[in-house]
Length: 382
Image (cartoon, rainbow, N blue to C red):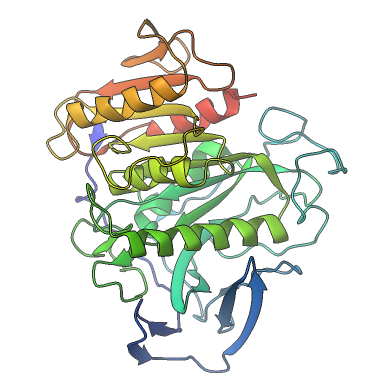
């Protein structure tokens, strides 16, 4: 299995954003509002979330979280990272969400049945959360049916990276291709270490985006982490309010510090997520905060590099062992026929919380096929 380094690729990507920016403190950033921008605000769960639009792709619906695609006359992107989906998948009631209209007893969210336009998957969408402009990319399947509940997958970038890499670079998760129009996808953007909200870099390479989640582990800044959790809450609320989300099939895939955030979501938002796929990620063992939810247990597929000097095999094994204990798994493993060479399946896990641990002969990178393997794992869950 070959590895693809996150430092070797860049994307020709015109970010269509024209937003006022603000820091986590009340210190104002520079403002570039964009011609004809309008703003709105709504309240969800006691917190105010607002958005500003500048003429880009928008999402219809009456959900309690508003969102917009921002300005920009168009985007340019290399063909190799176009992220175009090719299949007409999802035409039937399968394990990824089932077909037909969502009824009172179904797991479909309140957005089921609402018409919605497809946002441009290359245009940054924005949410104002806690007075800070937050950015994310969203992919809605080309054959989206508002009456069919779909899985929702978050693809979370690593430290000093951005959501363009996670969504569209060949070095990323390749979830748009792998899910084959059978899932809604959201790629959130972390904040720079300074906490000042800035649009994602046009080059998704190591060291250029300076973006992270909650401050670098092992000791995350609690205030920053809480702000990021509020951002995930807002994105999830928006998706469930405006799209037909299978609320029992919400997943997260994350690399490096995004893997840390994936594990954190499993602990801090355990009731929202069905399964996790950290890649070269660590925590909750050996990091702060620890997992405060004693009931948190998740179906997990974890990927670890044998020669990773950043998230070492020992750290990866610590994460694995944490979830193994939470999932009630034995120490006994079997080679995985379903997920390929380097993967083992732990035996005796509690029903609904399987654990698959995959290693690859590489360093701190996303190995080829990791995103597709994560999606196949998610699909296997009942």
